[in-house]
Structures are given as structure tokens and as C-alpha cells.
Image 1 (spheres, rainbow, N blue to C red):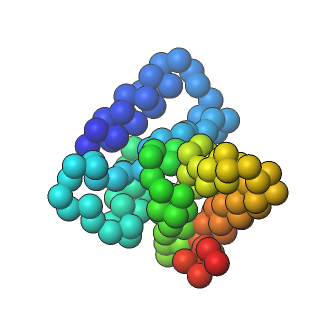
Image 2: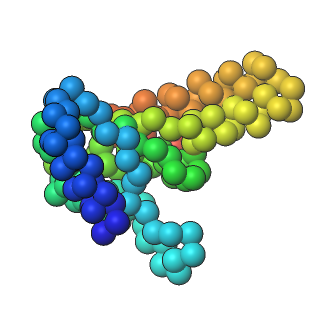
Length: 144
């Protein structure tokens, strides 16, 4: 409900300001339960709720949506993106990622321990996993 209201207000103001929506990108959160919520639900529920919210509240002529990782683990952020892109429905926009922590966390931990090569490998791996998720082709087995 909060995200829906924010999206409605954002795009209403974009219209007032004359923003050319077909030339813009949106960088939103995914629809996830709060950390203190006793029912965390499934990854599939989060992906479906996110797509449902976007479908109802984001103009269909927007070319792309690049998600924040929003404190999710590396694998959760990748899995959610993969599930959204793997749905049997064609989205009006491209769904991609603009992750910070979920893209860099493991690479930074590895780098802090002193291994530049392992850090580069960790970053390349996470980027490859998100690239697979971008096309709905990621799986847990891909993580090996």
C-alpha cells in the first residue's frame, strides 16, 4: 500500500513537471515484508506482489525498472529479480537491477581479507548471477 501510494504520487508529479516517461527509468524497492513481520512469505509471493503493484501503478510506457536490493541478501535479491523475469507474463517494461550492497557485499568482504583476485572473482560471479536473473535464467544451482 505504501509503495503504491508513492508510485502514484511520483508519476502524478512527473506528469505535472512534464517528465518524458518513455525516456526515464524507475529505481524502486521490491514489495517485501518488514523485518519484524512474523510471516515473511515466500520469494514467489514477493515477486508476484511486486509485479502486481508495478503493473497497477507504473506507466506502461516507462522503458525500464531497475530495482534497489533494499537490504536483501545477495541471493534473495537475485532470486526475486529472477522470479519476476521468469513469470509467464510479458511485462511492459524491462526489469533489471541497480543493486549496491547485494552486488558488492561479498566482494568487499573478500577484498577486506586481502585478496584482490578473489574479490574480483566474487564481484564477477555476483554480476553474472544477476545477469542470469535479468533474463529469468538464474537458479540456486547457478551459484556453485
